Structure formats: structure tokens, C-alpha cells
Figure (spheres, rainbow, N blue to C red):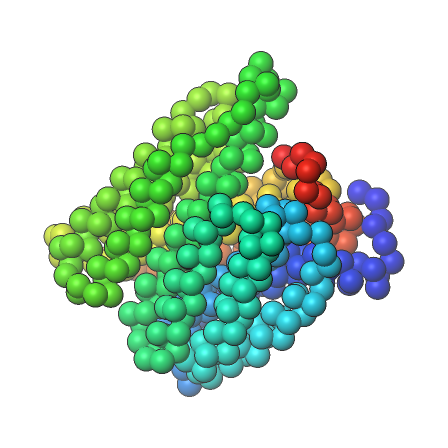
Amino acid sequence: MNKFAAWPQVAASFIAYPFRLYFLLSAFSIVPLAWVWTFTSVGWWPPAVAPVDFHAYGFLNIVGGAAFAGFLFTAMPEWTHHTRNLSRHAAATAVLWLPATLSALFSPTLSAWLMLPFWLYLLGFCTVLARRARDDSQVALLLVLICITLLNTCFAYTGQLFWLKQLAHAFIIGVLLVMFRIGKAIGQKALEDTPLAHCVFIPNPFYRNLSVWFLYAYLAANIFLNDTATSSWLSLAVGLAVLGRLREWHHTVLLRRYYVRWYYLTLLLLGAGYIWQGWAGLFSDGLSLPFHLLMIGGYLLMLMQVFSIAGAVHSSLKLHYPFASRAGLLLITGAALSRSAAAAYWPQYYEWLAFYLPAVLLSLAFMLYLPVYLRIFIANPPLPVTPAGTESQP
């Protein structure tokens, strides 16, 4: 890789192209958050805030907030052909995100209030870009941002863990929507240099819509009905709809690409997690194990893929997972299985399988990512937004 620019220009690129700043901040935040329960179990938890609140809140608003900002500041300008400089937007949101992150150590509810303008800013940014481009295909993304903002407000007002759990499912809705867009891109990429290179890969939106709307219904049932049976059946429906999305990937020409296989595994874990959650709810089993499969094997596993794909492609590189990304994905998968399935089958080792091993695996996964992609961001120029009327980059 060639040297991109002098250090002041490199620093400026982190603000002008905010995915560089926010992907690294999000990945860095995961490292200490992964150790919360481990520190608690050995009596090393100094903050006054309850560890369960900080752990759940941190992985959602702190990690997820930075990840969403990085992705939206990259994807929305590309989708709407917005070519203006994003420095002021990056600076404004960073000013909101940083104090909210620090205050979470003392009061997650205060942090949630501070994050409210952050989410409103992202919502306003995406709304303005979609309106200027007259792009009504972004409505689904705007709806999930509205949902996240409302649920964040509910947690800020009540401080109840219930609202964080619902916020987690709203994040999964965002993941499912983003996965559809990414799936279209990597599916087309997988066809390159094959006899089907002339074809256009278009994933079926039917199962995407089913999974998203069933998940909205599941959220509504949790909030308004308080009926375990209804929520459980809807969770089963979500899982089956997500698994239905696997069908379009059952082609050798696609599955021979490693990035498609990781994408496939993420869908599989999400579908299995919601089916397991529905089953557990119907038969009065523990609900925390499938929930962690969803959050680690779905949410965090997809974050690593987004960080790797967007981080490389929008740094003027070809789609490629370096060793750090591949190892990180394997470690995250191991953490998901350890925290959920292994802890269920070997309860005598619960503390090790639920706390210590996932902490080691998750922190190591994102510690591997950080130096590799920091070097990529420093050494490679960012990819400019494709102007309107020209063909998009794959």
C-alpha cells in the first residue's frame, strides 16, 4: 500500500469520511465492555452503576451508536449521491457521542438522554438526504431510526432494563435491513470472474420484509400486550422468515466465496436465535441464552463484517477480509456459541463459558481489527461518493 498523505491530511480524512473514526471508536469500545461481567464476577467492578445496565447499554448505545453513525455517514451519501463534505456532521455527532459515552460509567439513563440528540441528528441527516434525492427507498431505514430514538427515550425516562432489551431488537431490525443491502453487493461481487458475470444478483425482498415486520410486531407485543405466548409465536415467525432468506444463497457460485459464507452464517444464527427464543418462551425455558446468541452471533458478527467490507471498499481497496477480520469473525462465533449453547449444555462450567471465555474472544476479535484497519485507513485514500448519473461502485 502506498502512503496516502501527510499526517494532517490523514487526520482530516477521519473527519471528512466519518466511517474511519466511528468504526474504530465502536471496535475500541467493545474491548472494555466485553470484560464487564468478568470484572464483576471477581469483585473488580468499581463504578456505581449496575453492571447489567452498563453492559447492555454499552453494547447498544455506545458501540451501536458509533457503528450506526459510521455506516450511515458512508452508505446514505452513496445511496443518495450526496457529495458534500461530512466533516461538520462527524464533528457534531462526535461531540454528542463522547460525553454520552463517558457519562455511561456513572448513569446510563443520563447517557441515554445525552444520546437522544445524537440519534435525532442521524435521523435528521438521513431524512434530509433522502428528501433531497427524492429517494423513497430509504423509508425503512428512517423508520428503524425513529424506533431506536423512541426506545432510547423510554429507557432514559424509566431506566428499566426492559427497554434496553427492546432497543436490542430494534438494532436487529437495522441489521436485517443493512444485511439486505450488503447481500446485494456481495452477491454481485461473487458473480465476478464467473460464467454468470453478466447476471445481476437481486435478493428476494419478500423474506426481508416478512422478517422485519414480524420483528416490529414482536416488539409491539412485548411493549403493549405483555403476553409471553404471543411474543414467542412472533419470535418463531421472525426466525423462520430470516431462515427463509438463506434460500437465495444456495448456489455453489455464491457459497464458494468466503465472505458469502460468513454472511450466510450470520443469517443462520439470527434465524436460529429467534426460533430458540420463541421455543424457550413457549416452554418456560431461560430466555437469556438465545438472546445472547442473537446479540453476539447476529449483531456483533454483522458489525465485524460491515467494518471489514465498508472499511476496505471505501478505502479504495477491493473487497477482501484480511486475516484479522477472518480470525475476528471466528472468535466472535466462538463467543456466541460459548455464551449461549455451551453455557446451556455444561452448566457446571457456566461462569467460564458465559463470562470469561466470551470476554477473551470478543476483546481479542476487535483488538485484531483495530491496528489492521487503522493502518488501512492511514495508508489508503478514501473512496469518493459516486455522483448522480454514474454507475455505483460494486
